[in-house]
Length: 172
Image 1: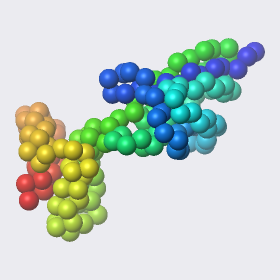
Image 2: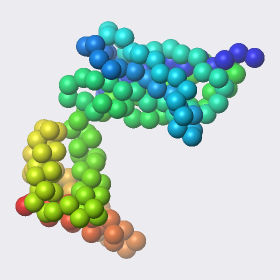
Image 3: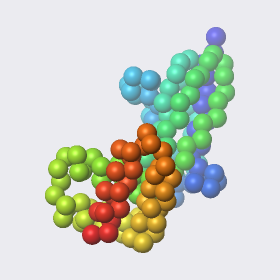
Image 4: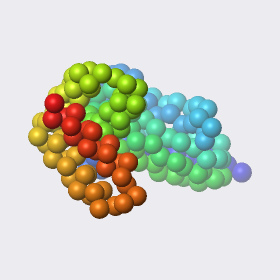
């Protein structure tokens, strides 16, 4: 019996290879499904992928990339690796802009649940938009689109209220 071999690729949001441009803390980590780290491999400058061997099993693979304008962590992938298999894993390296657009509603929801004062929520949301290069008008339009999408779904009333609260916060 042989060990599985993983070829892990870092990719842009357009699915092109994402090449590490500067030295830093750039690596791929493989964890078992209980979250225990199995291995960590550095991605060298000038490279877009690494190859590694793991014991047969089920794993969660994620990358960490320190480059300007992107989120530090890649998306995750689940890999089921059998004996002697050669597997390709593609990890998207999201831009900060994408992370803000996809995450601001959840972050505001949790901050509101934690009773963060309204003024702090306003400062937080404005800071996130600036960091993501997103105008308030653009984010408001996105949230309004989400409201329209869930408005007619009776079971989505809680989600609708969350989006309405996000919209109110963005308009302050």
